[in-house]
Image 1 (tube, rainbow, N blue to C red):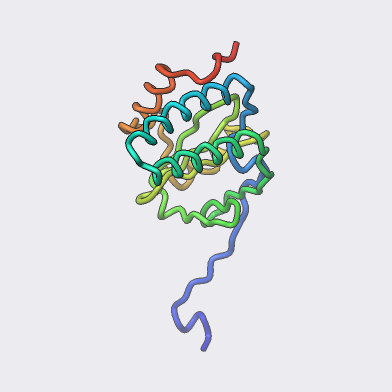
Image 2: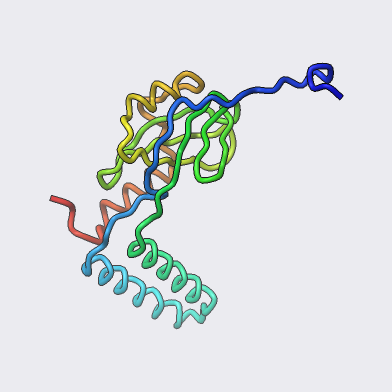
Length: 172
């Protein structure tokens, strides 16, 4: 059966922009950070031992191990592509019609493109050496740009906790 007679429209993918960047945020942690985390975890484990919450202790230890691995193993380089059909990154494809808006943020000296889908979690792409204005121009053709995104209660709680309990000295 011919595709044109079936009413199926074939779209050709046209790449607007492509770049490579680390797959995730990475910051080399120093001894002070691990000492502070270790002290908090030991105190928490002692409390949980008295409460006889051994399953929770295992969960805490596994989370601490994950934090250690993510803080010591550098991320791999991945490819990102902005096309006329959507954004392709690390083997995932995000169609324009599933994305609601985008904005940029900076953390640990690294610029990030944040994509908010209609449903589900945010997608974060590191820009690496790619110019933010070029990315903004390519993405803004398809979804709206938000200068200041709405902060959720989780964002506010994380900011408050980071300010109140710093695990390392602020960067000078």
